[in-house]
Length: 141
View 1: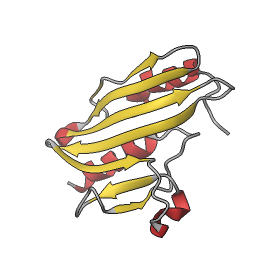
View 2: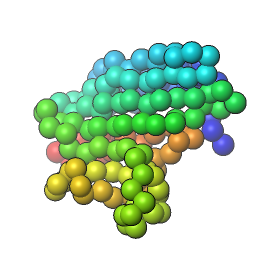
View 3: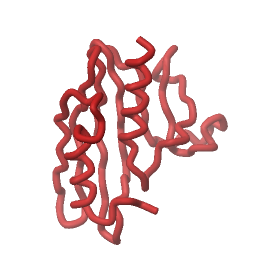
View 4: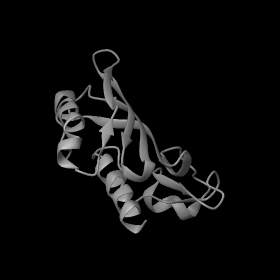
């Protein structure tokens, strides 16, 4: 079940991320309403060791719970994009079928090397998954 029954629920979740994740050093995330039924989430989440997540989500809340209609998440370290997630369909790539259209771009050849993203969703919050990924990278450094 989607935990965000209103945009207000989602805004509360976003604006309290830092309180729930001590690894977050700063955030510029902002939810911007685009009419009665649409909003955009955008900004960065900053961590130690010069890690950050760049976030952009297009949100819909016209018929009930908040739905992420589109997203782009990029994980960066020291000015280098190390991973990105998107929902652009690649129906010809059968290796991505299990999580279609959600996938992750990784090195080497980050633009073309895609793998499934099983924990990414349009109906659940994705940021905790990305924050855990950064926390694992920090711990492994």
